[in-house]
Image (tube, rainbow, N blue to C red):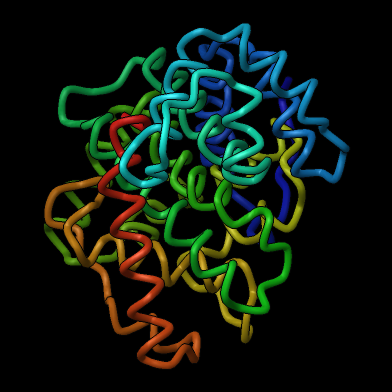
Length: 290
């Protein structure tokens, strides 16, 4: 399926349009979404998902089920006795936590099917995407953010355009890296110069192919320059910057500004609590997102 551009006010050149479509075709190299993944994505669009149905679907995916039980029995959710049932795990963690964990596990497994250049680290990509998703979700729980239920998936998929460029447009990917290193230009500026579009635009297009709700697509599209008091895009931008600032970045040497957290207006105690909880989740959950 070849989608039209969504949420994009730029008109790409003819060459840029060809490259954009070539990059999006790389989505066809991924395996079809599982029934579990489709049901979880449907829940983002407001469709009801019962615990019983979700439990049935997860139980059929032995890898996801095993990882979910490992998660609920980890130090992060320490409790008396071992949880051996998917249904019991669902009742303890809740639909949102399970949805986020399973989305992360399922999508990061899918990325491994793509052909990537030698200089691309899938481990770094997965770590950055998952960490950004965790922090974006933590922030959205404490702020009056529009569409907070989309915060985790927005963080998880905000850089999928970078992955598609590296996978499908390897020569252009190399030129973008060289241009950015030589001139000090930002990654989006270098992408626009070489491709005629940015990875954020391509990420939004990929999310349209997958029928991800529009508020998430808009947040992903604008995650480098989002404004608005509590827009989802602004929270995503802050989370992305903070994760880069602690050295968890897609590319080596990429930096971020942790002070952007203060833009969200949290007091020092709330900010410290958010970062403490983020670190706890990050330390325990990263093994399930690699």
